[in-house]
Image 1: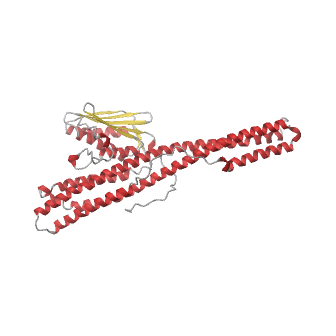
Image 2: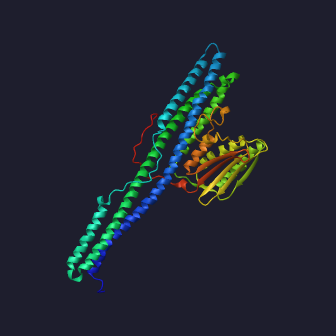
Image 3: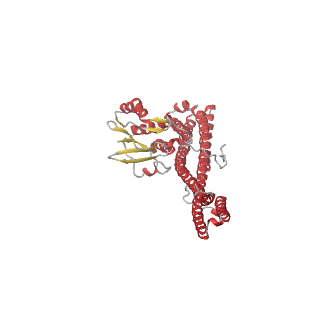
Length: 439
């Protein structure tokens, strides 16, 4: 093949180096853009989980801080009935004082560990490092022009000045393309690094909160066991029976605090399970019998084909309290409905009751902590079920919506993606662990 000789091969190499480098950089840029999109998905899930965790913990701390009033009132009643203090009365007084001090300390530690100074802004733009600072710009340019000059010098008789000028112009155009390709690559790479740093900061802050939650749950459990020893003493005095109510509130909040610790560990692998069959079983064995015991009609509209990346324990923690709330808020002869609708990339679950509707004043604070709008003031504490559900849905990358009216009743709608549950962060954090003051 005489028309393909060393001259042509070396010319094509000189002209082909820059396009090949540009193509490699472009493919790497697309990979970085895909990774950045994935990081944004991770980031939004961790941000919503962090916010839901903070809101839930604030409510728990508020409940704990206020349930001490039941203990203090009962202690004062016991003192008034027992004029001469005995050892048990003095021990009760000490236990209530210890719990009072612990509740104050938890409130302070919670404010210290929440880190409200951190912003939730996802970087949208990033400056690009100049391509002139990159060896991937100068090295191929130098090789291409050097090879072109070498070919022209070696085969001076085989080419003329016009062709040499054309080759130089072609390489110049390739240099311009390489410049913009490398410039965009650097911008995407920097944006990916910014987002990764933000994500790792969120993971670190969430880890600090989980340390606080675990430590608080252990301390409260110890206090609860200590306070329980005086349950019979306070129960023997009718006016001091509020002590038992305080214990019930404390036990409930400790349980949710422990659940918060387990649920907020979202960077773990979860199995794909058939949600529909589990819900059908729960309807048959738990929900329907509970509704019938209170003269309610339970309507099952769960469609087949529901599946999620979720553990069975987390599914139970999500649905059971919501169903129980719907049953508790309903009147005899009313109905409670559960709907399950599979979509192409998500599932939708709805729990509908015809009980007392939530007022427009209370709807904005149904998830966020607002002590001025307590949905259950007669209970002496703020309800946790919806807030825990919001946290669980956030860990799954979904959302929860609540609407309420006298005609339609209260509708709790859970929208959960099918595929985001198995996403795991495998990058080694670049930010050092910061220990909480409680550790």
